[in-house]
Image (cartoon, rainbow, N blue to C red; front, side, top):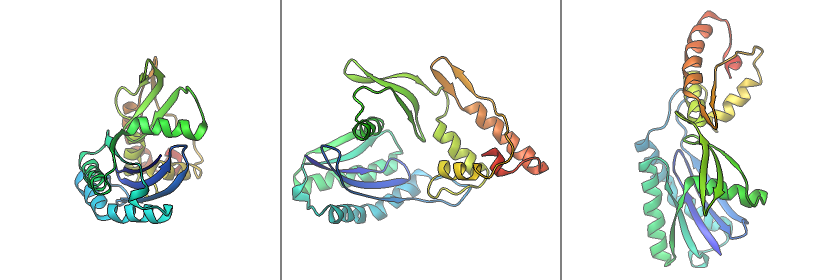
Length: 230
């Protein structure tokens, strides 16, 4: 089986073609980059996806050397994610499926991350730490479905990193988390921050609130650098 998949649940838009065994035939992407210190809004992100998605579909087909007739199905992210960008991808996927007369399959974004990891690692029954911009969960498979055994009780760790990056004006290109990691390599002071673990659950709102205060006060006083905070 060969599937074409469209993912655009946030600011990254991707079109890939993959075989059932996990062989990637094409994987083209384009990211909506906003200025440092800013985030991305649903309307502008949807406009970005609308502008680039047809080009990416064509590039994916060219890279794979296949035509629409050679595909067995068309897949798209049905959620969770940002409504506007998801809608753009769903409409395009639906049209392609109708044009090529192929089955249309909506995919849960979270489950896709886990299944992709299983294919790459060959793990049969993993316990998964799933972290992203909108999710922080400990997940495993039980009784024919994925079960959440622990999760954030407020904001996701990815959202925490994104908001911190905006606070200190780090770029979104290629991603806030990557730029935080690279900036941290230049730090010379360790700054202790609070965090909370409650059984199998975690909390990141407190660490974000604390670092917002620390950043404003200590940076203004010259007591630390952005690299130290990272």
